[in-house]
Length: 556
Image 1 (cartoon, helix red, strand yellow):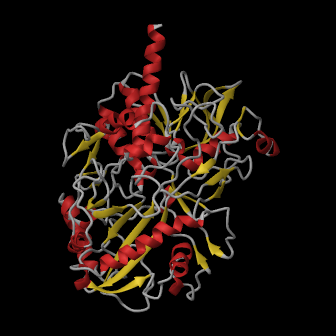
Image 2 (image 1 turned 45 degrees about the horizontal axis):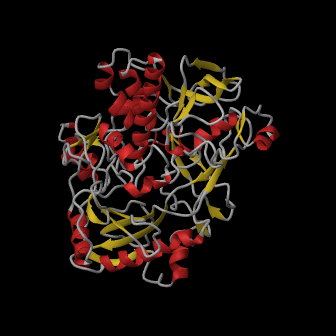
């Protein structure tokens, strides 16, 4: 059931080893397999929205989650940043998941354009990893980071991460190299002896279980299936790999009878295995947003399609960028840019380990398109992520109906101390924006604004969004910009004796047979940065576990 980036990676490796594979995907194959321009705004129908059950929606704008529903998961709409976990991150993952264990599987999928083949990088893998063209404002930020005394980092996936530098992205010739495109695109599929069967517009409703063995997947077809849709089945000769993500994987496990017994019985679901850990431990980073008005503008976010842009002040510019892109000069067009190129990693005084807990990403444009009270020449945005929050949430069933979204208790500032590193980083960002050469181009801080000075004021800006927009009909507390969208931890990896564990070290679901999970839900703790590369690594490992076990059985 491959919705996330792990699914295509696992499927491709299994097919290469001679295994017949069937994949189910909520939407069309073309949506994921045809690479899209990296700068294009994504189409809403391919994103589901899950609201936060932990807060009153009438008083607040909920922390909404964008759940990718196409083949390849978050890779079809994310920022394409290639960021691995750090060696210290894997200390919590247990036996068989140390840095030395996982590094070969990171390298296996990688085709790194800048760093080539080395002890830390790979070439020849399906996923192209590369830098992108920068812009003047981003370069000014790099110079200001240097003026502030931060070290320059040549490779954020190298020996050290603390400092500033240029990001690498999963982009191939100006096109998004999602896991679906990289592992299952037309070029790759042509090389498989028996390409995987991809069932599109196929929404999994539950797992088919006989006794305690998972033997297949029940699903429905259609663009908007209802409870009355005909139930179909895809039966597995060997096993099922569940790669539906940190929200939908626990939902499917619970609908299939794997979860806390008392709650499942209250919903009328037949119990297969009692494990209260399913859906618990939900982790995600939390954002703070800063923005500055600038005296110049050298990047503008254009749309790829042919839609009219009369409302945009740069219609001629965007027409030129589309023409350049269509003529094959994709890397030189703004449509071949993810809208960012640089960032920094900091270790706050509140960090609990040796690795950086904060990630600062520079966007040389108004990423949030706010209705400012006056016309601005340009806007610089900075997203500050606390990648090591203590807060945890949960996912539960709302009902036994597959069409009902799950209850989602987001892990956002449930521990108020998660805001302390962000407050510290906002003060650092404020200082950096005042250093040369940024001081030449910055007119004023517009978010949170110079009025936000005290801890209480900065906490309010983080927790409830821009105060200046609450008089424009916005809720008293706007939590919609809190999620980093690096959800993890709801089907935790661990020893079967660990009450927090849902899968064992081989990703097999504890208490049942014939079922593995390969997605971010197995992460005991999120990595120190973006999660996509780690998801692909997990998919690679899942495939290798299956291949090794089959070979072992044949030898015996």
